[in-house]
Every structure is written in structure tokens, then in C-alpha cells.
Length: 265
Image (cartoon, rainbow, N blue to C red; front, side, top):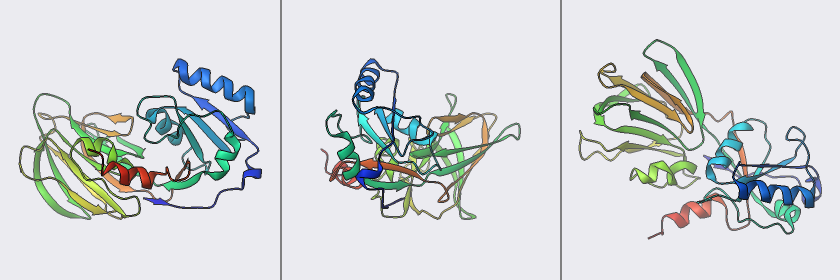
């Protein structure tokens, strides 16, 4: 889910903090930007400029979830779907013109075979994946009603609209417009029912995955980069009390990128 919001005017972006991935390109670019524009601490920043790829952007967004600090990414990685083009010139003006969006994460609550409960947030997706050679068996309940008594598969995922162009798309799930209030539920290599291709759920849905034959067919749950192994059940729902704020250059926002991806051949 994403919303628009108002940000401070250009003149109010007086404290900018830079952070970069550990790649040589990102580190060198960061050093040049700091020399040119200065740098404040991450704790005092009004806006954060993240240099790297999509993985580093996700890491940065997770780091500042709930703090209401906008993050502006510049691509020093490979894909850069969540990043702006790198340009050293007129950075403060670019920040002032940037178009903001708000992303709400999915909250995962996973129960392991030992009874331990692990919680994590995901801005892209929560996925369940088989750990061994045998396919997983998973029961799917939505809002307290069993919708699929047994799915035999390599895995299954619930995606945010922002994440629908990532792993979800690779698993042949639908791209979802950011304003649609929908969450794709997408199987990964479904064996039975063989022709089931998933579902589109309202963003208010509460999804429960129960792992069947968990000892024989162990399953791991992954929320973005956080992995929990040997789960027996996983609950997933959108957490609208938490937000990540992300900035894009005009006409290059997530909504436009999301739409353009649907016409990529």
C-alpha cells in the first residue's frame, strides 16, 4: 500500500545524511557527495541519501522504519528499481522536487517447531520455502476461513504492491498497482493443485499458513532478508501503523515504474 504526503520545502532540507553499501563504487560516490554537500549524523538527518542497489535500499528502509525519515536512493548497484539515477549535481534541488510515497510493510509472525515465535517486517514479500528435497505441504487460511486445505509446492508468498515486481513477478504473480489495496498471494512451483495460480487479497486480509507434515517436509519463512527455519505456522498481515517514506525524481516514482514494468517485453 502506498500514499502520497507532503514533505518539507527545499529550504527545509538542511540536514542530509549519506549512507552507502560496501561496494567500491558506492563508497567512492558517497565520499564525493559528502565532500560536496557535507554530512550530518543519521540520527539528526531530515532526509537520507542511500547509495547502492535495491538490496541496500531495502536494508536502509528497514533500518529507519517508523522514524518518518524520507530516503532518497541513487543507483550504484545493478538493477536499481527502487533507486534514482546517480547524479552529483544539484542534489538539494532534486531532493526538494522529489515525489514521496509511503509504503506499509507486511508483518510476519512465525511459530517454529520448538514453539518459538519470531516476528519480522517485509516491504517486498513474506515467502515460505521448502528446506529439503521434498515439496512442502501447506494449508492456507484467509480471515479465519480455510481457502486451500492442501497446497503441494516449493513454496508460497504474499507480496506488497511495491514488491509485486520482485520475487512475486519471478514466480509468475501479478503486478499490482500501488493504489489498488491488494496483496498478491502467489504459489512457487505448485504441484497440486497444479493449475492454481494464486489469488489477489484485500490489503486488510489476515493470512495464515500451516505447514503440514512439518517434520518430514520442513519449511522456512522469509520476510525480506529475515529467515526463520523449521516453521509450523506463519501469520501475515499488513501493518499500517508502520511506514517507510521513499523519494523519487518527478515522473519516475514507484507507481510509474510499476506501470511501466507491465509493458516490458
